[in-house]
Length: 149
Image (cartoon, rainbow, N blue to C red; front, side):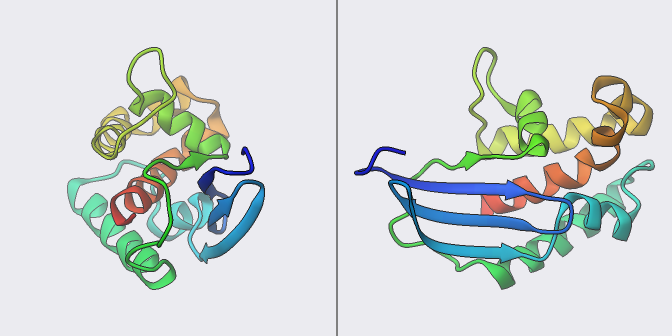
């Protein structure tokens, strides 16, 4: 990022999610949420059919994990965040407005709903098999972080 700019970066990994606030290229604050796409998938079996009840439980669990790891407000954070993982790129391919890579909080919520509706076979057809297995969980994490921040 340019020296005078502020940035907020989100990276969803398999076992954890990292959030960083930076001024230019220098990280100023770093947070680690002990919840990643693979971990959440293993905990809730989201590579199978996800019922409405299961989705509610997953969202509540993610909300608690995010609330425990991130402050309620990040002072000096910009209004937009940058995502840096394959999971985020895949979720944003569903959530972004056509022709852009920019997703809103509402768009992320719609993407979660769409991924659940696709079911496991539909997710694996639309995305590569490994990504399709964990994408529902990754989408819930991204949705939760976006709503929290």
